[in-house]
Image (tube, rainbow, N blue to C red; front, side, top):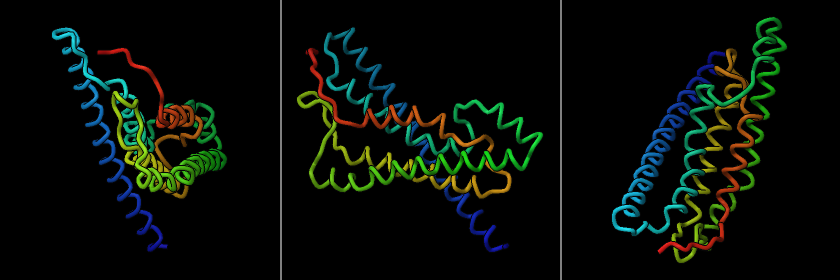
Length: 201
């Protein structure tokens, strides 16, 4: 039993460190986006010469930011949610409440597993085929790094939710399957190549 707790404790510390590191990297991407947007505004205003590809950079960065910072949100239990029922159930019926919590964590982990299953094979394909995202002639970037970020972020979330499900205390909040689903869905949609026209000079 001690060996089991030791293993889960070490895995928890490892995933926590990786989640925090990914969150820091996501914050740096946010800072980069802020700099790019402000530089574009400055160039438009002063020189009437907008920076080409700002829209594409922001679209790609949003997806990366979501999956870089999501694991740390799972770690600290800060996903947007409505948990009045679960908190009340945990208070008055601890066993039932914990069972619901573990169910939510496992559902969330399963959702991440589906993302990994769907995207992991496409990372290598995108690398080998030289696939790109963005608008051709304006701004393009290799597709595989973004897909790799999604897979890594989803893997960290999967590990964290599984650890939450088997822990005795559980996370600081209930699982985030319902809350995270719409956000992740929009982010994954944003990862798909987009065709658009750009009339900027």
